[in-house]
Image 1 (tube, one colour):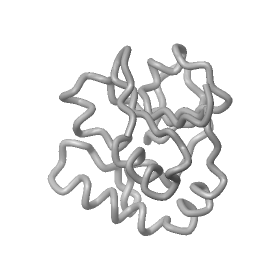
Image 2: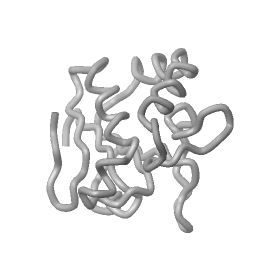
Image 3: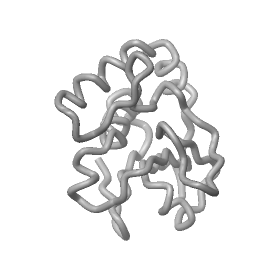
Image 4: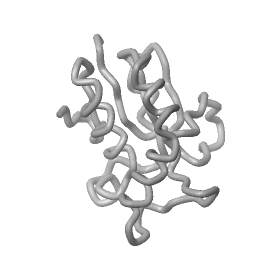
Length: 127
């Protein structure tokens, strides 16, 4: 596949043949046991952030800033053919509120050498 980072839902992982898959969600569906990237979870000061709450993006960005050292180290070593999974289904209404879009933008901002894609059902949005 190449140097692709997929930001997708847990349910789409089976359609992607990747070297590595990680959870960026606060929890995982039954039957999933992916390694977790704690510093990308939508959590601030020990509380879960919900995508439909007011100021979600602002709060999530604050959480990323609090973990800036871990985030920077992870970005430096990030390799392609990797999936970052969360609960949000790929329907446009749900996806518009999902933190995986913010994670995709974060990666693309600091790692322009990687092809970052947000999985949209049978298509992919590439930025």
